[in-house]
Length: 189
Image (cartoon, rainbow, N blue to C red; front, top):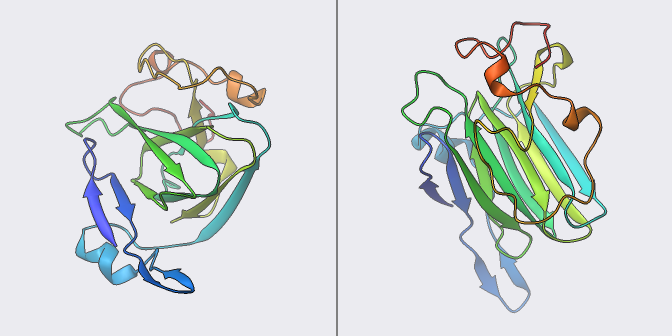
């Protein structure tokens, strides 16, 4: 695997190294030893899959707060997405900055999302399938989110939004919550 740190400290794009022959290719997509060697958390507590019917579908900027903060490893296994992460760690030199990365079945890339990063994506194709590996179990009482169009971040999404959940349209703006704590346990942002 090839690990490339992004402009956001601790977030990595992970490319596979294909071993090809007449059958196709083989590649490693996860190795705890390689993750540890790059200073990354290799714990996997849960794996999820999301399928999106329509191009332009947006899944908003989600994250979990302490004591349930989670690392995510995100990969698009069918179609393509524009994946966005925001650094929400107040002590970080890249605090409140974001990046977007195209993940697709074709490029086989994954995005390593550290704890206290908001994560969301927009589908670039119909029938986009995304696989997540998370370091912690889903904890609804510690789930938070930010609006896709929050002026604090000025994210430029590549397509008009074709689908978004009601829940994702109701997250409060970042500036309306305490910068130092982002949310209190049990209080949804």
